[in-house]
Amino acid sequence: MKRMTRIVFLVIGIVCLIGVILVFAAIYAIHRGAKGQAVAEDTPAIILGCHVKDGRPSRILGERIDAAYEYLSKHPGAVAVLSGGQGEDEVISEAECMYRELTKRGIDGTRLYKEESSVNTPTNLRHSRELLEEVLGTDSVWAKQKQTVIITSEFHCYRGCLHAKQEDLHPVAYASKTAMPYVVPFYLREIVAVVYTWFFR
Image (cartoon, rainbow, N blue to C red; front, side, top):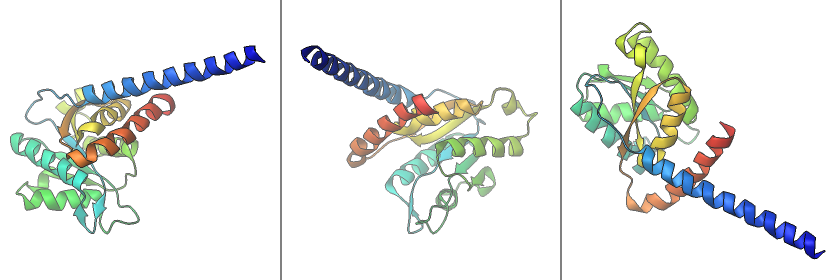
């Protein structure tokens, strides 16, 4: 009986240790994933959506829109895919919300392409890649390397770029800053999502 008890505690200890290692590995990956790099002026971008409240961007989506505006202003030759569908509690799609906000700030609407059928990050990237191929052409300069800027929250950059690589894109992160009250809950949720992605996606 004592031997069985020791085995049980050993197994529990190993499981806990593995869990701790995975958590710290995910934290490190998330931190590293938000580091961007310089890109050509005409490098296209994909802006990943987030929740829309009463037709207006949520705080997190608003931060992503700020980052998208900054990037598009600095890179006037770039186009962008605004990626995000319409949830049951949303009166407009996330893509439409981003389009309205960016054009309101002076970004030319002809540079913006709405992708409104996605329901999660993997479909965001898949459908956005297909739209870029349609817009830029499979024989374009972009199509040779498919370098693409992924604009999303700093905590979401790693997973966004990971899914982008699965879609044969060459992603570069462009992170939006997360307001302090949202840091802990969103980072905790993202740690779980990253570990899940490692094992099941």
